[in-house]
Image (tube, rainbow, N blue to C red; front, side, top):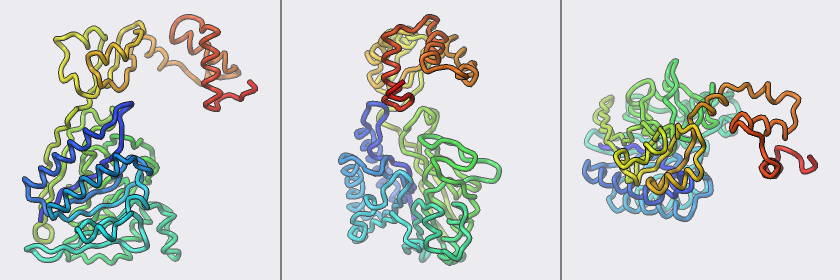
Length: 385
């Protein structure tokens, strides 16, 4: 049996002001080609299918397009929700989808969802564990001591009574960590001592009973603890932190009990995401310009601020997402003790000090007025100040 492992599609996502619909459709088409070429039997989708709880019309149309193609190929699809998904929206129509071998577990309802498939080696169980919080699981098992996400997951697996002698796979969307080391982070999830994207860490040994654990939530493709506990990573680069990621999809060949082969098949996007750094003249020199259609994060090292730098960059790199600076002024700001500056100073004084540090001159009355209006709208200062 051959399975392909996907996660963190984030359909409907954008990069800055740039819509990614065409890029996401392009990469889904490449995945469909891999499914045909490798004669894939099933697809595992490990959550964060959508980028937001209320997906756009184009995002739902894109998922519909992908699922219809999978159904037409008679490929079994196993999909769970992630922390970005709405349980209700992702689960809508799931009972009807099962007629086309599309199995969706969008919400934990007290028992671990299971589907059994058959190949030349006999039966194999595929378990679907949607994103869960400790409080959700505690509701179904009030007699259990559930204080953490790991307690919750272990409780679910204990009550599922998984038979260790049978071949089994689990699809899950949690922050799974190895012993003494966290996964390499990428994407919208940020690091913390206990969590990533508000998801508490759980140990990879929770999944020891499974032949393969198909994980979602971390955007950088990698294994955790053992090769068969794996994040597929997102199919596209969705942030600057992913700029050096090589995106791929794991193709899993499930043999006899305990026999699992994993092949990482490279994904090449329609438009890459790259980070350029240097003086703007050098970045835009014809000899240095390559793949101008790519998404660009630019760090300018010019000492002076450049008027309309974004407009200038976009004349050559039309998909420039963001520009920042790395020069003597910004490095000086990094060394400033903000807490010392903030002591016993008014908003106007703080802004004035910052402006002087940044630009080497006093802020004008007009500029201060703009800053005060923005601060009021953001709730930083009161309307009466």
